[in-house]
Image 1: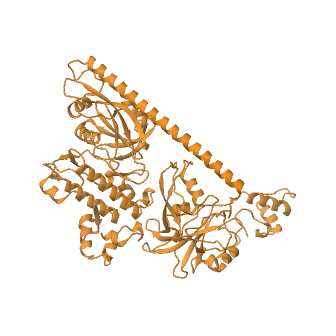
Image 2: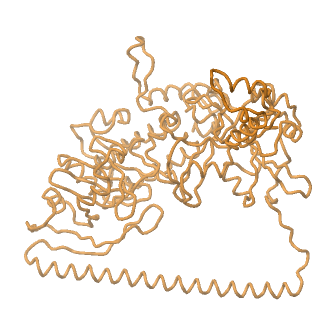
Image 3: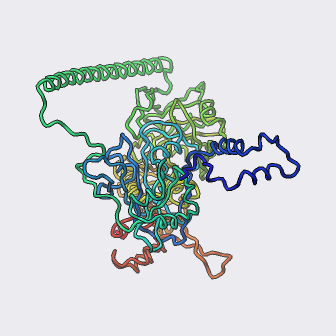
Length: 636
């Protein structure tokens, strides 16, 4: 058998005489000594040695019925460091979904993973979903996934670098049988495999394997390529929780010398833990000294400011640290509040920012960056750093003070929105609200600096994700996004003083961090409300069409209920994958009818009286979920 590495003499289809004739055609004459059959075979062997040994660019099985979902299996070859929990994490399964090829006391070489396989609508290919958590920064993402899944994953077409802790959506190769066999199993061809050996191991016929994989020449197989094995029964034997991937027998009784050694090890461990405790205590003392020292520096700055600005605005300095969503200190700095009073005209801040701070901020201010810092962080606002555009400005990726940030660039005419967002985010801090780090300003531009959301917005991940190179969001991820957004809304509605309404809740304003946890952003339209949750009536309606509550459109009064209505639209989007204003085929083909997602979903819900009678509702559920969701939860 050939594994794609070498071609032996028996695989050459021409005789030495034919080769001699071919090489002599068209007046192209070689020396007779080089045309000798032995030399020809040597040259052929050398040329064939350049054929790559393996390939991992396996083409998935094509499909046409995008509603098709079936049970399939994936044969995963165990590595020396694999444990049960690692395999479960790699494939997002429980131990009940695993079987192994372990026979009596022989260690298992393969684990067979049961996964639901479906036809991806955008690609018309059989694939299944899982997630991979990056444990260490090991270079580019594609090679990392190739090593982790040993050729079973469809590698992303990207040059992204994998960051430690990032959760990456992965597509795995799988297949569904056309009602001929019960299951198809994805299997990566190994070095010494032949069709006969594979058929013998799994109890199938060579002809069946050739039929499924369209193999015309059984002597030419590619090592490292995924082949699909047709099965009528579940492969392997059940895998029990108490078993280990690599079992290590323990001795029945510990000899006395070993017992003494064990006791010494325990004493050594005690010493190590004691030293670690002392080291942590000393670090805590050092942090406290650092904080007290900086507080003293801030006090000295305040004292100097008071003596130098007699009769002018009094500034109060205090030490402050911002904290990111992973609860690590981001940066510490002196910030100050400005009381109403005369403003020093020699202040180097641009007039627009100076006036805003003097009039509206009697609490802490965020970090002030210079325009040069912002310019350098964004590579002079290079197009490749552009993350997106909105009604109030453009957002760029940047690195400021060794941390990743998102920088919103606004015209000075957007002073009101700039002011509102600064006022809200300087007072409001919550893990499900985007964190404001600082700002910068010039005479004609304003800049807001936020924490960076590594996984973009919910909108970009939800609407046609495959065309953007993203894997579809799983049902569990969508539920977590909804919970996170609800917590953020509840916080600004109930737990801030004063209370706020956002007035522009939508999927493009809900960002996802590197763990796919949601954060509400863009507070440029936020408005104060009273204890009743109602704000003043406004002549101008603001927000995004499709998310606006009917009562807000009618009377212009922004309330917490307006945000809750918009949040309901977000829930419909998470379930359906559709945009808030859907396009349906109208009476005239050239002019499609535009209909709100709310009206579509409500009419469907009225025709689905219970979770057991929800056929019409299924038509509206995102096909990218591939029926991998609990029906009763969707109905609720």
